[in-house]
Amino acid sequence: MRAFVLGGSGLVGRAVSRRLLSAGWDVDIVGRDAARLPVDLVEQGVGFTAADRSDTSAVGAAFGGGADLLVDCVCYTAKHALDLVALADAADSTVMISSKAVYADAAGRHSNSAEPPRFDGPVPESQLTVAPGDMDFNSGQGYGPNKVAAEHVLLDSGLPVTVLRPSKIHGEGARPARTWVFVKRVLDRRPVVLHAHGGRGVDHPSAAVNIAALVETVAARPGRRILNIADRDAPSGAEIARVVAHHLDHQWDEILLGDDAGSPLGWHPWDRRHPVVLDTAAALGLGYSPVGDFASTAPAEIDWLVSLTGIDGGARLPAAHDWSVEGAFGRAFDYAAEDGFLAGRRQPGPTPSGRATPHRPR
Ligand SMILES: NC(=O)c1ccc[n+]([C@@H]2O[C@H](COP(=O)([O-])OP(=O)(O)OC[C@H]3O[C@@H](n4cnc5c(N)ncnc54)[C@H](OP(=O)(O)O)[C@@H]3O)[C@@H](O)[C@H]2O)c1
Image 1 (cartoon, helix red, strand yellow):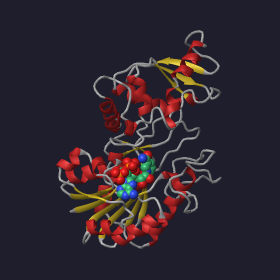
Image 2 (spheres, rainbow, N blue to C red):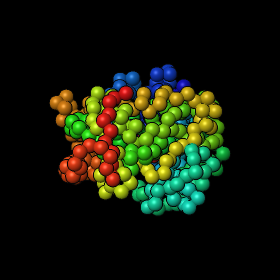
Image 3 (cartoon, helix red, strand yellow):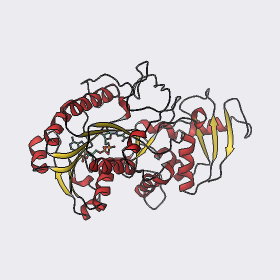
Image 4 (cartoon, helix red, strand yellow):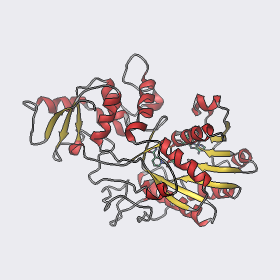
């Protein structure tokens, strides 16, 4: 059995490749930079072609006569999808990794809109999506519409293409690795963790290893379909922080901030005012068996992040992975603002804007 994975050196691609290799598959990968290919995949003899996916002759030559499974982890536009269709004709089963960012609520709000979406409950695959579009896919407003356009091209092709819609993906190799907001806090030996909106925010995690398990299931059951893929459970931001602290054997006090606390105090990537949970019944109905829940799959990312910081316990990531200073994660580490807030509290206990809860790892 041969699998061909576009973008196979990244977060999803390496998890898929590992899963298939351990099941006895031959795996060939396309990526632009061989240096991104994990050593264990090199040692297991994956084939690697250094090419941009837009170089259709190089990708076509690497694909050769066909594959049992074709997986595209870097399909962001209708053009990418058209290029994939040209290969999919010679594949028994094709998988395209889309995103839950395609979903829109009844008011048209979506993952990247100024106003966050408000779904009625777990989101099924039949949920409304944003309209297809071809603006810059590498932008908040363009990402979802381009994914929808790509999905349409693939599903309209009539070929056995499975579109997977993950939520926030975690695992070894994640860029960004969102648990860093809590891992760094542990490495910085912070005695407290603050949570905006009481830490109640939920934005469903999707373990890369669970996505890989579903890809293997789909390989054995080719079809034209859309499937949500997310972890068995949908922990809140506070619960995710507890998983990290527990795994790293760290104790801190939780400060659950009220809804009136000033931003960015207590910010974290799962801070949704309205929960975003994917309905995964269709994937389970296909026979997919998750590798684990969030708590059992999250250590892959946590341990990897700790390993990147080196054995001296420093809480810095190498430049290529550093989301802590620049970019969206910086606001999670404004310790001076936190300390000012904490100093303003006379003593632990209920306050108009927060509540202190001593945490013991469970
Ligand atoms: N991460 C998330 O939380 C998340 C959530 C929902 C959906 N998704 C979707 O999941 C898919 C996979 O995401 P991921 O997190 O696994 O991405 P990733 O970690 O960035 O991996 C992408 C891989 O593809 C390679 N690549 C990038 N552009 C390429 C190109 N033009 N030609 C050939 N190779 C290219 C990259 O290596 P080089 O740079 O060396 O080429 C990288 O190894 C994406 O389609 C994304 O939209 C991700």
